[in-house]
Amino acid sequence: MLDQQQQRELITKAGLRITAQRLALVKLLFADETPRHVTAEDIYTQANKNDASMSLATVYNTLHRFTEVGLLHEVLVEPERVWFDTNMHNHHHIYDEDTGILTDIPAIPLSEMAVPYLETGKQIEQIDLMIRVRSQPTSLNP
Ligand SMILES: [Zn+2]
Image (cartoon, rainbow, N blue to C red; front, side, top):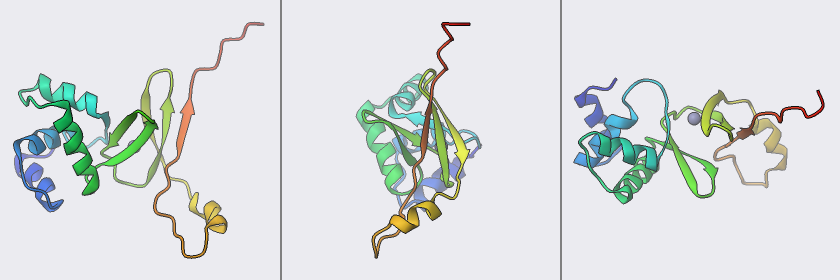
C-alpha cells in the first residue's frame, strides 16, 4: 500500500504534475502490491463510488497519460476495449472469454523465435501474447 508521499512521488517521478484526479487514480490503481488489470470503466465506477467524482473522459485521458509515461501498460483484449495493467514487468496473459478475467503468466523467450524473421535494422519493441480460453463444450455423447 502506497502512502500519500509515495503516491505523489509516483506521479512526479513520471514527469507529471500532481492533480486531484491523478492522485485519486493512483490511489485506486496502486492500492496494494498485487498487479491489477482494469478497464477505464472499472476505474470510473470505483472513483465515483469513492468521493472522487470525475467524468469517464477524464479517467480515459488520465489512464492514457499514465501509459505514455510508463506507469501503466495497455493490454488489447478486444478492439473496442482496452485494459490497463499495473504490472510493468515483461509478462503475457491468459484471457478467459467466459468470465472476462485476465491472468498474468510469466514471459517465455519468444524473441528467439522471432529474430530470424526480422528485417535488417529492426528490433523487437515489445511482445504481447494473449492466450484466449473458454470452457470446453460438455460432451453430447457420454
Ligand atoms: Zn498483466
